[in-house]
Image (cartoon, one colour):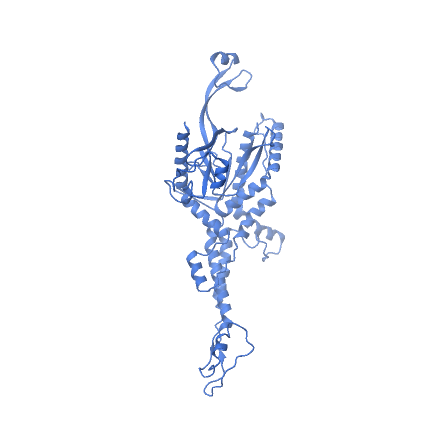
Length: 453
């Protein structure tokens, strides 16, 4: 394939991935903003601010997210290599475990794991990656490292991949938006003209260039490879690809066979040209690992979410009722005065500012036909207002599966066994996220075992 063929293929695949992920990413982005505190609809927010009404955001989402990530931080996950059968060398498995443990410690892999798990808990998906780096500026040796991908929307997967670890994906993209000045400094000879606007998929996320930033994409792709394997008399298997008949006969194979596999290539592109590549990856796995929150398959459509998705409505109700209660209570001291025009004649300025300040006294003119000025007693805030706020708080616990005992609040339990049982209810409600992280870490272990040799 020529570079133009690669570019056309990559653009078409990126558009396809964008079209397949557009709806899911829009919902995930809303979840992420909601967790960050953007919890009022824009129109309602503007209307209330224009009217001078309180807009309180009592964000309870972080405590539910931390309940998931806190357990992961306390029980640091790690990769362990075990022999699979009697023919596997236990010493080799122990050596691999030691090497991987060193890679995890040198990489501070817990940061990568927790970042991906938190993204999965908030918006349904997170990622981390495995890279190779030179050991130093003056060295040729390379080290394997596990790195985090902070932006959960930076990775675009092959829509045909079915496994939760995406190990069956044929390709994926890892994108980054660079300011135009930085892009030119890194690739001075690269073209900065000829970019289009939105691609065929449309939308801001499909843009390769918006005038200020350039999207640079790592294009990871599996290419088919056909090899010729030879089984020797001693039981060893060797790769005989490319050997002529004389060289093959010298090996005296017991038998040979045709093996269909693949190799992994990495290209770097910007939408109009190839910037770098191809670089052949040393392993046979794409070294990007997703951590999925929860997935629900509705026919051909997959709904992916975290714990924030269905807690948003109770949180909005909670914010609304607490804001309404604060507004009602704040207005109570501003109850109007009941006066006659004669009583405030000549004193109108003092009476109009009575509710804005804290005057020591209010002068008035006696009116024989009316009693002295008096306030109209305000209505006390309805109890239903506080009850609704409490119901909304309980609804948040119900939809997340995290209850008071898990959040550290005291309950009616007396015995230690009862307290632990209540805490386990919360652990069960969020165990899917921990289990999916463990599944992702197992995939990372497979990638490392394949890459280390």
